[in-house]
Figure 1 (tube, rainbow, N blue to C red):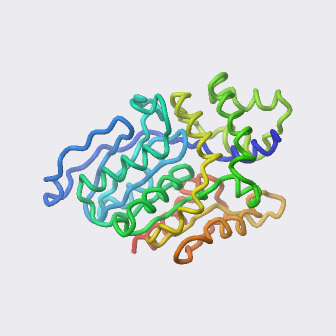
Figure 2 (cartoon, rainbow, N blue to C red):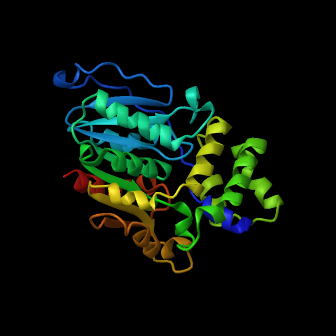
Length: 301
């Protein structure tokens, strides 16, 4: 069972250095009131059509820096950070849910800043949040890209598994993070007899984990493993693109993910577009930046 948890933990933490300074928005957009939230932080830069970037578990908006750098001459990019990740103040995320309230605040941001059908791009847990926003807002969202993410993460291990079956393992991950912290999680799970395998390589070995307050990390991990959004896909009217890392190596678990990704998105009203990027692992935009950037340009048209 611990090995199953280890596979589910694969790549849920990501990290990168700081985000570039915001630029002045278009004059026609400047009339919107300043946005303040005790759940999320938003940095805005560039001019043009709106693109909202949502990072994964344990990462700040800096996860999208290299992508945003190549877009802000023709798009207005909005870099989201969930409070408590990295070095940010935890704010209201000290208690209660995480992804749901974050999605609600992104929706409020879209309304209050009067964004017109923005594109949403979310990585990992951020991909789930993007799907929540799209389901809630309908045609107020222009298009959605989820990057190495799924509406129910455990389905990437076994499409038959349920949230109820996973919950005890998710609770174990929650408790391990709260007791030992993110840096010690691998060692603690291994000491209990688990073999993290690929999860250990991807999550803990040399990724430069940003981390954050262990309360939000533990809650985010728990939600990523137990929240099943597959039924909510029926409410997503925006076109969805699913981007994921892939390898031709048949000995790699990533080689066998393609069919599971496709199966997980079958409830969308219109078929998703699937794009695999060879040579990338979980951090697709970092592992293969040129290929990923080309996919983003095509996605944004």
